Length: 147
Image 1 (cartoon, rainbow, N blue to C red):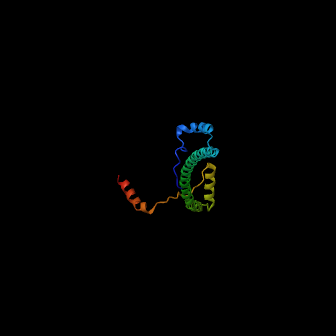
Image 2 (tube, rainbow, N blue to C red):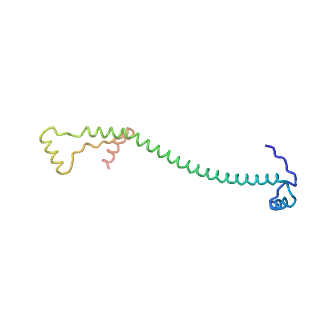
Image 3 (spheres, rainbow, N blue to C red):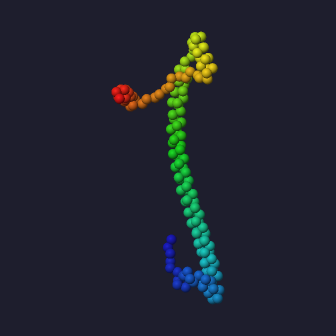
């Protein structure tokens, strides 16, 4: 869009805005010019309001971005936990399948006595040792026995 310079009598100076209105009424300036000035003032007010609203929207978008980043991090953590549930349920299944069941009357009597005390025979604790640490485990045991 090309801008052409306005003639000097049409240029508005900040200090002469009120002077222009009073001069236009006294000199009988063109009503078309007055209408155009009023349109431009209304347009300027609308643009200032649009600028303020846009700044508010930009702030809201930045807040939303930070909340979405937090949500994404939380979602990843939940996904990791849920991925481990299969292994946890398998371990529980293995542990419950290995619970000793009484086979004879003596064992049943022992189990009943345990229940009267409030204790229930529990299975062996399952411990997972990563293979990288398994090689170090016997060395650590023998080293601690030497101390």
